[in-house]
Length: 141
Image (cartoon, rainbow, N blue to C red; front, side, top):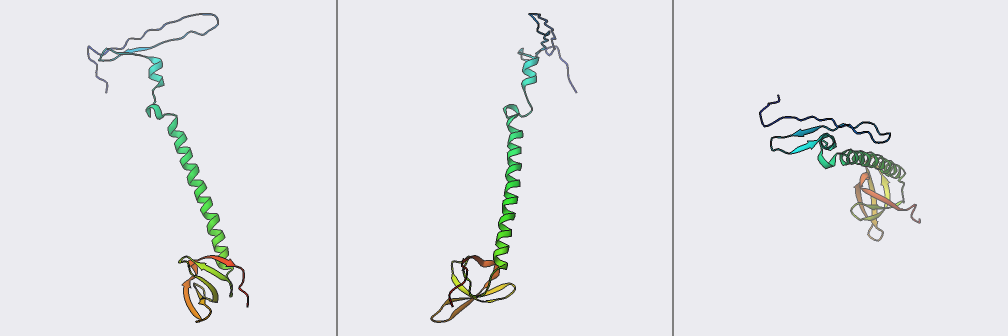
């Protein structure tokens, strides 16, 4: 796995200094093929991700947090929309996703019949899911 050559060798030296109450320190030096030496402290400071070693876990934690919050936020909106569609009644004024205002005339399980023009008695049938919002609780009789 490791090849040894005459130009590659490892020099290990232990330096011990006692100054005051400090514990002994050891330093390991390694000389590479190009003649450059690195100490053991330099080797320990390098991480597999380079300079992103401490940034990568933080980024992953942020990404997981965003996914969790978006999942729960979407679930709350779906529940609110489902409650609004279940509470539709005749004579409610609604706005469709296409931008059409109308008054509910008839409610079927998957469709809603809207009256969009009073003078010509124009009615359109839309899917129940295409109702965007209820604009007023009930229209006057």
